[in-house]
Image 1 (cartoon, rainbow, N blue to C red):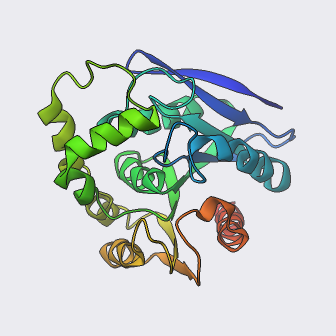
Image 2 (cartoon, helix red, strand yellow; image 1 turned 30 degrees about the horizontal axis):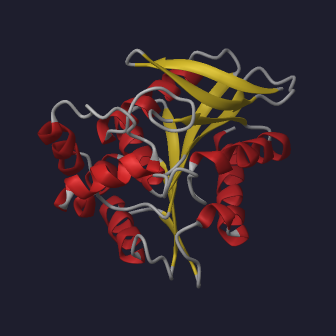
Length: 253
């Protein structure tokens, strides 16, 4: 069964793609797929529009309940982008899944900024069993160094459509300093973490993957030789991800 799912986050209505495989099992493993920051109005190779297909594959081939939410400001989800808002949306999506009667253990998988946000959410949610982060940055220091430029980019990308948002620019910008995957990952020692990065990523340096891995101390880190930033469409990266999810499911039974 597949459908469009609606849920609430801080009074905003968010849209998600939800796949629930037919199964006689009482509880099913679940993966939450988190998109990255769109490159423009049409999104990008790591953006939300590419994830329903992956959700369908993970559900039909591997038996996972799969959910790919559109975080605030993206697609038809309400609201405007803020880093703290996106973190709240992911946490709310976890809660939404946790309330489903068929959901067993939950894993997070994110691409680009979605991978970093997934790490941050997992540090706050005991319910999460593990995290897969592909092409994720260690922090948002580059954004934090020029928040006005990010705001312009966010408007062009269509994730901030309200001309009066943010009402408090300094607070909006401060979130870029306060929220950090590199800091959060130190709290995930009891969770399994997969880090995947392309050696030729010209958006987020592979050095950031090493920083995340070192901060955790026991990640499964894979560098994809010659790959760029858009790992969602790199068959080698997806094969690594699916293999990791399969091992997670088997070891958790």
